[in-house]
Image 1 (cartoon, rainbow, N blue to C red):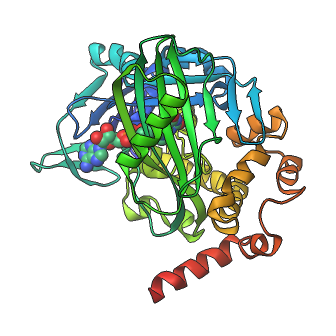
Image 2 (image 1 turned 180 degrees about the vertical axis):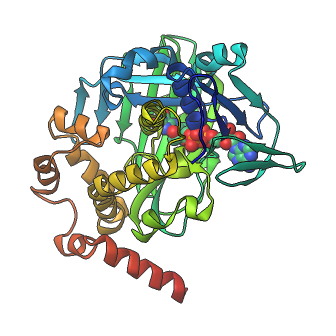
Length: 410
Ligand SMILES: Cc1cc2nc3c(=O)[nH]c(=O)nc-3n(C[C@H](O)[C@H](O)[C@H](O)COP(=O)(O)OP(=O)(O)OC[C@H]3O[C@@H](n4cnc5c(N)ncnc54)[C@H](O)[C@@H]3O)c2cc1C
């Protein structure tokens, strides 16, 4: 391991991808590790893109709440869920940050020169020790991070969450006080469908048409019309559209366990973070809390390492990933029950039942911090999926083996 003097020599990160995870990592490490300097390379002409990222504040450890504050552009004390059978208001604080607030968080470090940006630059090759851009130029650093966003992996079996949303400015106040995280009273199509609403101000609201679906087909016109119907139903017809966002998110059904142990420096790979490293909530596909947790872990690991040595960060992250792989087993089981054991038209019943459970259990679910008794509580009772089908999808290993066989035979 290379010798360094942490008192005089800086630790250099090269991060590929100035999206959510790359910038959160840079922001966290630059804030708490005085010796760290960061180069970020992105193919886009601006950092942070054009996004909104929402999260429950409880999903972030309390010692980081003060630090995360400048990122939060909007926050609400409660949110609603609505189903045909009932609706409910949950006392779970909900927050949203966006590309502008994220840019503002890293801006002081750009100004001080500790964060260097290389934009409009396509990276074509990454290893654990260097990064090559399109014109052949190479960048080296003490740690190389791959934060290029989501990509499919044959060893991870997925369901798909897809959505299309618009932010509108209404002529009259929309009168929505709290977010509606799921409005599943809408007609059901293509699996489980719901509308997600975030009121940003008296006259501004983000409305997203969302599907827990089996396929990747994306019919933007249809989703747009369905949002317009929702807008009409709520008397927000007089409005102008100020922003559109769309995307797909992975919902993990199963992971081939061999994948977890195999990867790493042996293959001369960089350290994968964010969606690229599969650091996201298995049921929602959201990655903000995971990006913060990972950045905080990396920052702590770097700070606590032996003064004169670079820490083997890749090994530390692989250990952490194995821990998450084990922790998330139960979530992947729930996803298989939702996507495989229940018929697409009945998926909404699974979610409807989930939201009748206690508020503290729901909080722990999104934190990824379920107790054993929570796991039992979610599964027992009148099952909205047929028991025999549920049993068929119980074993992750058997599911992976069946899927591999199916792909081979296709
Ligand atoms: C529309 C949408 C809404 C979402 N909403 C939420 C939410 O509310 N809450 C939440 O927690 N999660 C949300 N997510 C999920 C996830 O948090 C986001 O996708 C998040 O932006 C992922 O962060 P990331 O850093 O992994 O990738 P990204 O933010 O996508 O960043 C990847 C970066 O890598 C760059 N890049 C890619 N390839 C190259 C290359 N070859 N060379 C150089 N640069 C490259 C890209 O230009 C980009 O800037 C949402 C996702 C989508 C698509």
